[in-house]
Every structure is written in structure tokens, then in C-alpha cells.
Image 1 (cartoon, rainbow, N blue to C red):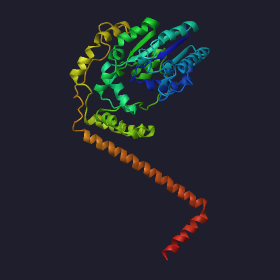
Image 2 (cartoon, rainbow, N blue to C red; image 1 turned 180 degrees about the vertical axis):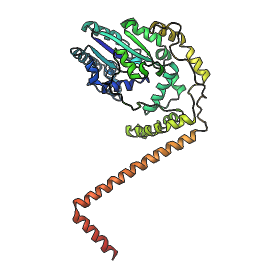
Image 3 (cartoon, rainbow, N blue to C red; image 1 turned 90 degrees about the vertical axis):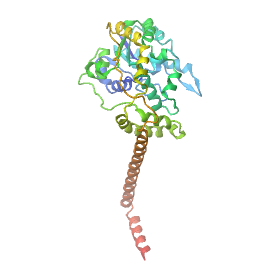
Image 4 (spheres, rainbow, N blue to C red; image 1 turned 135 degrees about the horizontal axis):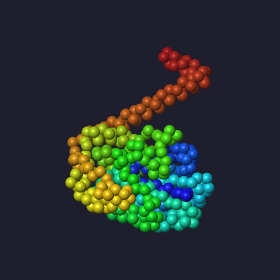
Length: 376
């Protein structure tokens, strides 16, 4: 049966890597009867690789949501899917925002998709990667500070602003989804490298589609969307208050330098956002629901959903003795990069001047003569 595979994240579970992999291997997927369609819609700050964003994407005009335009995009997107089904048996969509949006601004999403499936005669298969709740929440906060230019909230402030059950009660979220599309149509995967089929996320994801990672597929070796660590994320949080960082180019320049420093900071000051005791108390709230997921969705009895090992690391403190070192390192990285940019600019100017001498030999001779005359 023709199947629409919807990969819904969650955030910070290698979704960017999976999306880019699917784009880079479009032809290889098509040879297997799978299509990862490129959608024509544009959303501010959203990569084109997130081809499932039209299912939930907001379109704003002067802070007002354009519901009519959003509905138009949804209808056009589903029409494109129906056209793709004329050529392929499997369509793959991906967007990590669906995991949260289905309980906020798109609460009827699964009902709408189910209706489309019943009318057009295709099945719906949902793929969701789950990360241990404490790691998931910290990753989302880290990404907000790293990527957004006006966010200055501390981790504690961030936790106070979100609805934790809607974000972190994975079992209840899956049950709400299953009530519409059926539990048998949901594939739950642990986002733990030790559990990945073949030892990597690409093989693991392909397996959920019924495919294998063969030599036809290209795997990019670059690390995508690398997070920041400890003191470095705090430096970025403070920088977010500067008006100049609202410029996207400045923002990206700063992030690149911070990423350069992050590894050094992690090595010199291993730390955690929560203490070991705080983490244990936090995880206790979700242990029962997680075990139900392992039993009902993974068919594993009497087993925890995640590795419950908690690293014995000190809780990050702002007045730690390594902060000054990291600030100096960041300033140094900025200075060295600016020096390299200046060096390249000077070299390019020399090449231009040299070309001018070649193109305009009489100007060069005149300049030489004038220089000698001045000596007299």
C-alpha cells in the first residue's frame, strides 16, 4: 500500500542530519521507490530540507497569523504528495516542529492527515526519535540560546516558561497520536547511539522505512548543528543582548567562533546544567510513562526506555574559575579570525593592483617616473 512516512523529530535528535541526508540521496531513494519531495513553500528561518513544515508552518504578517495562506499551503502540499504517489509508493516528510505543534497550534493535525489518507487511499506511518527528558530539554534550551538572537533566558527561566507535561510526557503524547492514526502506525526509536542499527543514525532511519544503508547512499561527514557547552553557551546568552547581533551575518560569525571554543571549554570544565541529584529527581517523574513506551511501542517488558546512567558532574556555576579563560579564548579566536580576514583582503588588493599595472602599463611607468621626480 502507498505510504506517507512522517518523521516528526523530536528536536535535537539528528533531524537536520537526517533531512540533509535525504536531500543528498534523493536519487538513491527514488530508485528504491521512495520520494523525499522538495516543497515550494518558504518560511523564515526554516531550511528547505524540512519538507514537512507546510503541515504546521505559521505565516506571519506584522505579527498577525495568515491562516488563509497557511491553509492554502497545506492544500497545495497535499496535492504535491498526491502527485508524487503517482510515481512512487512511499513519500517521506520530515519536520521536528511537529512534535510540539501537534499540542499547540496544530492540535487537529493527525485528524486532518488521517482524513487525507482515507480520501486518497494511502497509509500513514509516523517516525519519532525520543531523547531522555533531561537531555532533550537541555538540548532545546541550548539551541534556543545558540540560534535565536533575542533569547537571554537562563535554563531555570526556560523551564518556568514551558508546559513540561506537553513537552516531556512522551507516553501521553504518543497515546494522543495513536488514538487517531493507530499505535501500529507509529515507530518509536531511542535516540541513543548505542541503540542505532548499524551504529549510525542514517542506517537506523533507513531501517524504519524498510531500507538498508548501501553503497548507493552518500553520507556527509560534517557535524551538523553542533551545540555549545558550559561557559560558551553562557557567553552566547550574554551576547544575545547586544543590538548588533540581530544582524544575521554577525550572529553567524559569533557562533562560528564560539563553536571553535566549545570543545576546549568542555575539556577544561566538564559540568552539567543540573546536578546529579536534580537530574535523578527530574527523571523519576517520567519513568513510569517511559516504561509503558518500552512495553507498548517497543514490545520490551520490564526495561527502561533510556539508559538511566547519570554522569557525576558538578553543576555549572557562573563564577567558576574557568570562565575568564574561556572569555580570553573567545576574544582571541575573534581577533585571529579578523586578522585572517584582513590578511586575505590585503592579498586580494595586491592582486588587483598588480593586474592594474599589467592592464595599464603606461600608468605604471608614469607612476614610476613621478616617484623618481619627487626624490629630486
